[in-house]
Image (cartoon, rainbow, N blue to C red):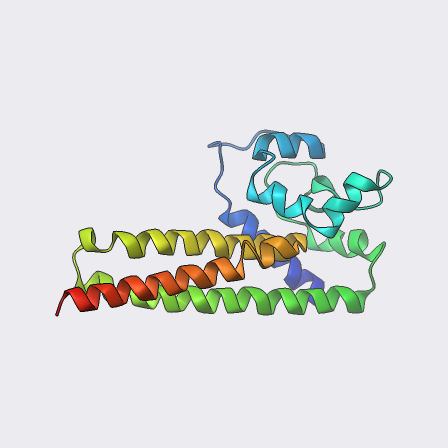
Length: 192
């Protein structure tokens, strides 16, 4: 159960990192369709869930077989998943051992992404100390993309969406880190 709570906190981090389209969230209660309409069908939040096992089951199975937005986040807008309720929700289909394993894997996946972010930020900090801001645009742009891809990893972990954990997450984040290193090397070569 402790692993499940930690796993759900990762989802809460993703929700906190999500930019709000409105200054004040709308009042609930909501149904899943309203969540999708507000976030947008092509948003990372909705796509991450739709491509997950649960999102697929909701589309192809009988109603109620798999959790939707409000099952995990509640019927009120912009709330992280409720860890106390999740044990009951997830435990309907999954064993505690399985949930603990998912949580441990999710923590490792996010930790690796954060390690890559720290490496990129260290290079960017060096560049900011050494070069004027107008020469850092490429590095700054790549770092912005890296943050987006780290958010995708968190969303993928929270929704158990392999596409967001991997294709829109780690490989994309790796590419961002390599581009930041390349831009750093270009700055060093140009300064000689």
